[in-house]
Length: 137
Image 1: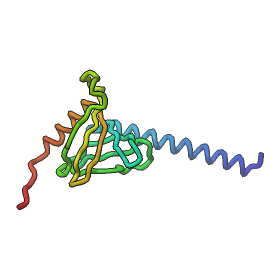
Image 2 (image 1 turned 45 degrees about the horizontal axis):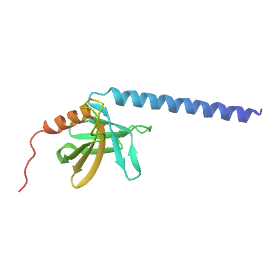
Image 3 (image 1 turned 60 degrees about the vertical axis):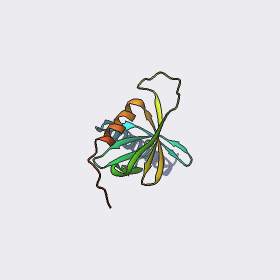
Image 4 (image 1 turned 30 degrees about the horizontal axis):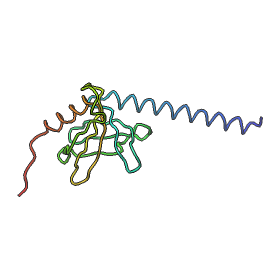
C-alpha cells in the first residue's frame, strides 16, 4: 500500500476519533448543566431531538446530533407563552415518562416542543417565576 494512502487513512481515522470525542464532550456538557432537559422541536421536516436549557432570560435549544456549541434556537422568556399541552398517549398513566407536545407562542410565532411530564412542570414553573412584564401603553 502506498505511503500516501496509509497517511490518508490515518488522518481520516484520527479526524473521526476527534469528532466523536468532541461530540461526546459537547453532549456531556449540555446534559450536565443545571436547567437542562431532553426536548424535541417540531421542524418543517419532522421532529428534531435536542436538549433545552433554561437561561436567565431565554430558553435555549441545542440540536442533539451536532458539533455546534451554539444553540440551534433561542426564545426570549418574556415573549414565550404556553398555548396548549397535549399528551401523546392520553390513555397512559400519569407518570413522569409521559410525553407532552407543548405548543408555545413566541411573539406571534408558533413552536411545538415535546417533553416528559416532569420537564413540562419545570418549564411552566420557570415561565411563571419570571419577573413581572412591563406593560407598554
